[in-house]
Length: 314
Ligand code: CUA
Image (cartoon, rainbow, N blue to C red; front, side, top):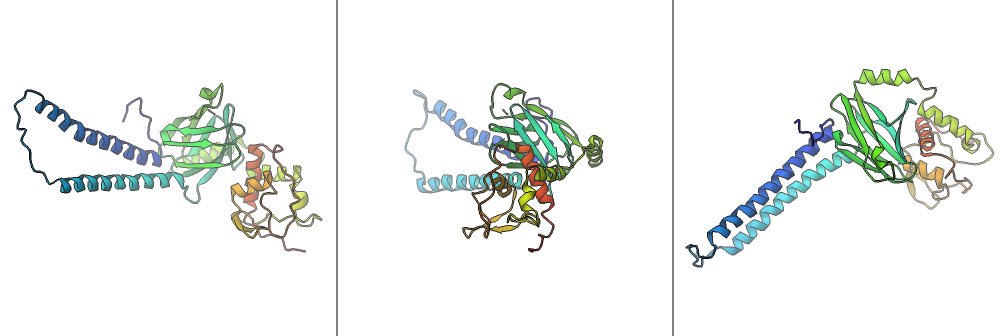
C-alpha cells in the first residue's frame, strides 16, 4: 500500500497490527452502517404526513433481545481474543533474541550493541532476526517509537523496559520520541537501518570498538571497586556473582527472586532493599555514581559470567 499518511510495514508485528487495525476499522464501519442506514430509512419512511402503515405489529421481542445481546457478545469476545494474541505476541520477546540497549536522554538516543558498538540517533539491526531492546532513561520519561515496525514503548527513569521486533524488510526507517520530554522533544529522533545478517556483522566489525559491552562492564566492575568485595579471595564477605544471572536467589526474608536485569539493577542502586540470605547489608549504593549506560555495561558483564560456576567457598 502506498498511501503517504500510512507508514510502511516492515516487521512481523506490523503485519499483525495492520490486519487487526483494518479489521476493526471495517467492523466499526459495518456496525455504523447497521445502525444508521435503517435509522435514516425509518426517519424518511415514518416522517410526519407520509402515508405509511403505523398499525401495531407483534414482534417476538424476547428472542430479538437475546439475539442482539448474544451475537455482539460473541463478536467482541472474538475481537478480544484476537487483540490479546497480538498483544502477547508483541510483549513477549522470543528466547534467543539479539539484545540491544537503547538509552534515552534529553534529547538523544544512544544504542549499545553487545559487541561494544555504540551509536547516537541511529540503530543498525539485522533483518529477519528477533531483536530485543532494553530501554533506559537518564532523566525523564521518553518513548521509543518505530512507526514502520508498529512498536512504541515508554522509556521510564529508574527502571528498564523492553520491546522486541523482527524486521522483515531491508531499508531505513524513522524512529521518534513519542512522549513530550522538553524543549527538543520533536528533534529526539533518528533512523533504524535494517541490514542483511552479513552486512550487520561487517558493520559491527568496521567500527572495531576496543571492548565488548561485557568487557567495558568488567573494567567498570574493577574501577568502581565491586571486585574488592565480590571476588573470591577477599576479606569482605559478599555474594559471588559468577553463575548468578537467571538463577533463583534466596533472600534474607525467606523469599526468592530471579537474578534478572531488574534484580541486578536494584542490587547496584538499592543494595539494602534485597539482602541475599546469609549476608550482611554492607554494600553502599551506587545511585548517582553510575550512568544508565554504565549500569547496562555492568549487567552485560554479570550476564557474561552468568554461565560460569561460582568459586568454591574456602
Ligand atoms: Cu524524549 Cu520526547
